[in-house]
Every structure is written in structure tokens, then in C-alpha cells.
Image (cartoon, rainbow, N blue to C red; front, side):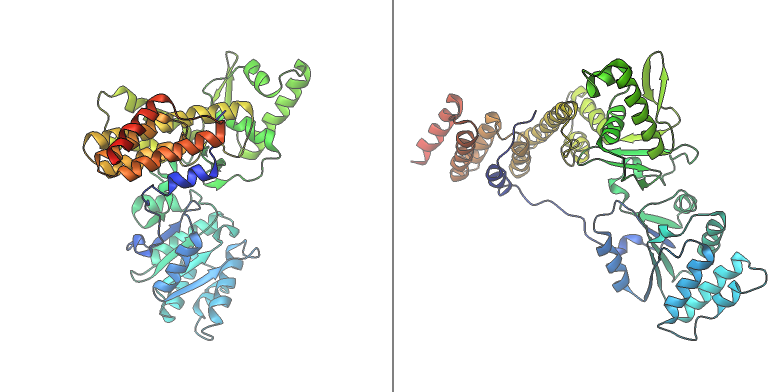
Length: 435
């Protein structure tokens, strides 16, 4: 189990870390694509949405729970737009009221009405209230085909479906903003097989699960959720290993019953079976496209270790995946052990980058990564010593001495001990030079 880091120690370290870049809302990233899809993973989607509204002539419509069918959605959209421009929006209504409704005619009529309003953007919020049926898909395809070059469609939703967006993304008609956080580019990449479930699991942090772009929020209790992550985190498991982890001390019959009920609930939440069982082992199903951030992280770490002289970028591939501690809000023993093991690998990556930068005389970057490593291991006196020596080599003896005081205070508060003799010697040498 990881030893807790005091709040004050983290503050002392964070004060010295150089600021890092943050994602900002930028509608220009949409380019000249006909359709802009805002990913459910996009941080501050409301900020991005507001930026689109303010960027140029935009018409905004937030779908409601009544907009479940294509007809209801279109009539609700026209009513909303007509509030600002009464009398102008007539062609879409006429196309919908025709004896034989042709979706191509409806799409062209909507475009004509929007052009009459001199709109350059049509922003549709809460788009997943609209059921993605065959007629909806056909209409959207016709609408995008009819869009002129100066009219762009922006879609904001809680999840993205394959159809009709995947083909539009592949053709270049649509772009997805915010999928940088998705593993392997998200569900709309060319590698995605729409005939198999796309299961994306992010365990660094509180733990998020996406099935075909839709996040699973309800798990029917922590046991179902924890068993799901246990399956995902192991390439093969025996029933005995599962029972020992979750139902140690419970009779075999009772454990078997609870296990099958819990496993069935996982299947109900996902909508498919996530494991195969053969030769007494549970393994990930071959019919599922599984993308697991921890597995990606460990592959990047292993690749860097195998190389004789790994580059900074090799280590950074792993560092970028580790956003927060593993399942940080869960406390089962197996989770805590896994969290600590991953934290140690992350610390190794940070130190490796720091030492590469230091060897290239890039001291600012080296300090940045040493300090980040200290956030993960504030007890690591070797890191404190390296920082002290690096500060001293830059002529910043005051920072070197302050680093010693940060360590000394932390060890006294947390464990009632003083720094080791090796660290005290470095401090005495530096303090002597200052005086």
C-alpha cells in the first residue's frame, strides 16, 4: 500500500514544478470539415460549445427528451429557430407535411431555410436524445451531402455512435474534437471494426468504461464494477484466483452463486460477454475490441526498458497515459497492490526522463521531471539528493538547501525521523559552500 503524502509536502513540491500546458477551446481546430463532432471526453465541452456560438453566425438547438424521432426533432428545431425569424422557416415544414416524405427533400429544405437565415453554423446539443434509427442515419447522410461550403454542422452528445459518423470521418467530411484522450483514436478510427464491440477502459483515475463510445455509469454496486476491472486487468484467471480475491473464507457453493450472479450483471451492463472460458481459464473475449490504458502503459514501459538507450519520447508515451493513480477511489487489497506497482513504474519513467535531460545539460526540464517524481515518492531521498546537487550545479544553493528542508520536514512529520547520513552529508557540503 502506498504511503500517504502530506498535503504540505505536495504543496512544497508543486510550488517548484514548472506550469504545464492545458487544453483550450479552439473552434479553428474544426477546419473546413462539414461536420464537427465534440467528443464526450473533451474537457470543458461547454466552453468549446460557447466558443462555437460566439465564433460566427450560429444557430443553437438543444434537443429535449421529446426529440426521440426524426419528425419530432426536426419540428422542434424549426419551432426553435422560428422564434428569432418568424415566417422565414417554411420549406422544412412543407417537406415534412408532404404526402410522401422524401428524406433528401427534407434535408435540402432545411439547408435552404438555414441559408435564408444566413447561418454559418448549426449547433445541435444533447444530440443523443435522438434515437439513431435507419431513417435518422439516412437523413443525416442526405443533410451532410446537401451542406454548402459555408455552412457547418456541430454535434454535441454524451456518446458517439458508429453510424453515420464513422464513414464521414473516414471520408474527411467530419472531424472529432477531443479524442486525444481516447485510446487508439477512439471508436471512429479506421482500425475500428463496427461489427465487434469497442470496449475502452481507462483505469488511471476513478475508472471509466466506454462501450462503443457510450460511458457506463451504473454498475449495480461496487462488486460488479470491481470484478469487471479485475477481469480486464488479467489476461487469464482461474476461478480459484477470483474466489480467493473476492470471496476468501466464503464456502465454495455460496461463492459460486455470487460469482455467477455478479458476472451476469457485468454482461447485462456491457450488452455482451467480455470473457471466454476454456481450459479452466477466463480470458478476454476475442470478439471484443478491448483498449485498456494500463495495458498500453505497461507495454510502453517494457519497450523503453528493453532499449539500450531509450529516448525521452519513448518514456513520454507511458507518462502521458498515467493521468492519475490506478482506480484511485477504490480500496480493495488487490487494487491497492496494483496501484502501488503502477506508481513505481510511473516514477521510474519520470526519473528516466529527468536523467536523460540532465545528461543533455537540459537542467530546467530535468528539474521539472525530478519534482514530478517526488510527488509520487516524497520519501525518496535519492531524488532529493539529485535535485540538491542539480540546483547547486546551477548556482542555486538557496534552492538546494530549501529542498533539504522540504525532505527534513516531511520525514519528521510523517515518521519522526531525520534524513539519512548520505543526505545530511550532501547538505553539509552545500551549506559549507554557502557560508
